[in-house]
Length: 81
Length: 274
Image: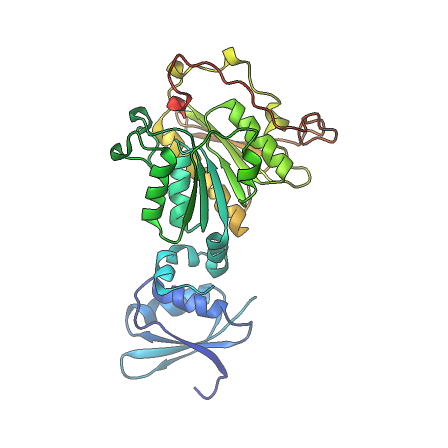
């Protein structure tokens, strides 16, 4: 994770769809363009859907890190506004 | 203002929308809408605006809930009979969403109180059932430079149009000039209406309020939208501003509010066809 200047992190392991994506979207809206967010999410539905939804919003997915404990960290660069 | 987890969940289907997002939802929570008439049109509008999280909703109506209202005035229930409509509406809205502050006006809207009531609101919905009220709301909103959404329903038909105080936008009086003669207006006995028509047109009014508050999409300004429930036909009629309009024209002749007389109704209250 040292490769990126992470501005903020958000944990969405404690919520279910669609609040997973909503929490990630809210965190992204609070960043400036170009800043980087790390999203901590569970395996399964979140990891299948949240990266895709964030991509559809126009943001740039930099990396998906497997924590090997059933969770992932999605590294996203904010695009726009 | 930061959202609580509960609010994120409550408004998640709004926040997901690109046109609304976090910013739009905050605008709704900080926004205010006055609904004049807690009847057929006002009921669905109030339900959806409360559910949407419009932070302050005003509701004005002088009547109490009558059995003949319940076929279409869906914010009231059988248990609310004889209760002031504004109280019944307030209870329902507060039960739907505790984020909403409701202000009630248990009064007829007239020339001597309307300016004072509308001044506190960002957007106004005309959910009234009579021409004197519709012209009064129009003239007051033009004079106070307040945006509002006109609507009317009758039988299987409905219509709505939005006014904003901007260059080139026609007001209700640009289009309809004056109230029709009293004998041209159907009496209550002749004037049925399908309850679902109130739902459709009232929801379209709520949509106009949401678009105005969030800035999403296009408003029905300069456009009268009509709906015929029998033929399933929606029509958008483009209408220009009338530079000679008596209230919003270049040389207005109406400079004070008018309380027009209402048609007699054989002892049946006018809201029987709201």
